[in-house]
Length: 501
Image (cartoon, rainbow, N blue to C red; front, side, top):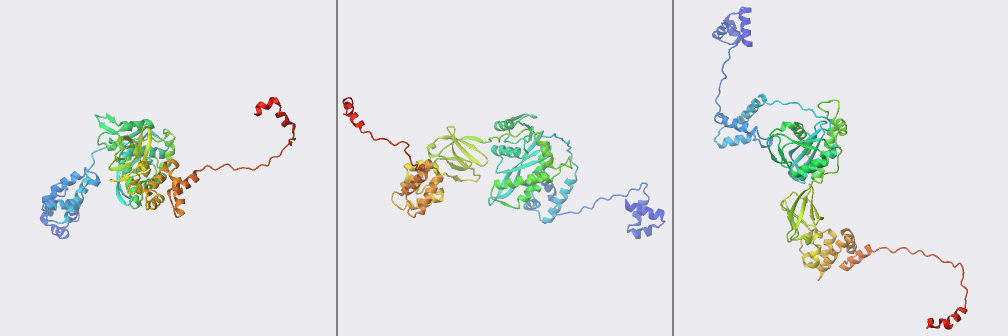
């Protein structure tokens, strides 16, 4: 359009000839003559020149792959290099740069396409609702790069959020995430908004019909909030927490990925500090003059009080093996040998396992999320080695005893009957306690010639009740007795003779 206007000005207004215009513009006189004869001032459009490319036979295939990947999560989408290797296996002879240029051009066109979906902005009252969601992050924890499931809980009104990382998305993790979030917020909203996660919904029915998990309902009843579930594939219905997943990934988790964490507790403590710092720095999107922390103070007054944490364990029956071990998620844990071959109840917590039998706790272990691990407590096998002391020499549970006991065992096993003596020392642990026995063993080892009798003697002296201190008090006689010899004669009288005899 600019060139046509310029030609018309040069010919009509300035009176230049076609030859002169052709010389200045580089256009032919036939083109100029045809343009000037048009009734409408419309610059003609010429079809774009089509240059053949070595990529043309695979262009449609690439478009289909890119269109398919656009419906996947970002972690599952194929890179340009993966697409190049795929078409190269089909016979593509060109370079990788051409594939990269094609992918960039397709993404620009897809981004420029107008979005068909439209949404209604939502508004929530203070203390009305919160939204919950999970995300997947990868961090170095305990020396290994691990996949972590991160629980996101965000208040809809104040936009305060809380993050907690877990090894998986099981029920006990879900319950613990709610307990931590409500404790951080200082209250419980009246409504919770979720997607149709399997730990909360057993079956999705028509419309809003849901078959809610019994344990999840128990948690909702404990905290007194109402659970509301989104429609299928309608993540925008909880868009506040969905955006929180993206924002925190760029902020908190990007910094967390640059560090190495010894365990999850250390990581979660650091993440909690980052959340509180963000509350103080971030302004509210609807009230820019207020920070999230300031608005959270107002929302706390509208929320329900936070009760004691929900006892969110998952219970299942397990059978104890002949070696006094139970199996849980590819790992084994010990219980007292008295319960061998019996059924016990296993309670799973986020960080611990508790074994119950006859209505009381019989064992407790730190939970392991590795595989093929065996966790022993040597105290569970003390009752058995009293009857079978020979098992002490190669017993796997006793290899994990405290160091003083291991040193004493090495010394005693050098002599005949040492295993039986060591069993007698271990038998004192249920009676006097592990700490007292360790002190007695350390004192015996310091003497240089420890023995079972020495340890039990020291333990007996440690446990001996101290005698009360004797206070010497001099007694003074207020009235001295008078010698009365007549009493002897009185005893010899006849009426007393039978008594004396």
